[in-house]
Image (tube, rainbow, N blue to C red; front, side, top):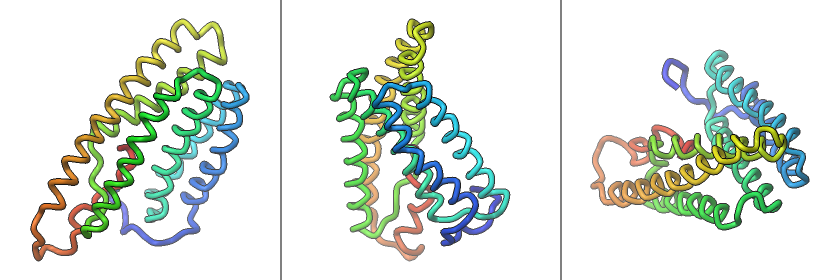
Length: 209
């Protein structure tokens, strides 16, 4: 968030309102995926993506960057991924083992967060592998839904969707191993007088991890 003001603790801001709206669409999206209304699910995903862009742009434009907003955005991203995974697995489009692999990595990340917090550290900075993995999953799931919604696109979108899903899951865990190693390294760091531990690590949320 370079070039913007300090991060505030405000709750009711225009960007946060958009984030709450985006979160409110998650159960709608999940329902559409479960019942097989993939075209409508994709429409919800488009609306969510637009609001995601707008809340970030408005936060910078209106100088309304908030700590809550920094937490809501990655939370919404993960919820949409989980909703798509669960809905597609429920319909047997995706195997449950793939859902377990992806969810287990996020559970592991939460455990690492608790370990860091117990040692007085904030979240680890985002690793580029995590960003690429999240991008692959964000691309894979709509492609799979597109293939299910429109038969004409299936020969192209389904293989691409599977390729990105498997690659994304692999990178997801690769990034997870990087975070495990980094957590082990960080908690062995000696305390110094440069400030609280959390100040040294709380540079960026693990939002694309």
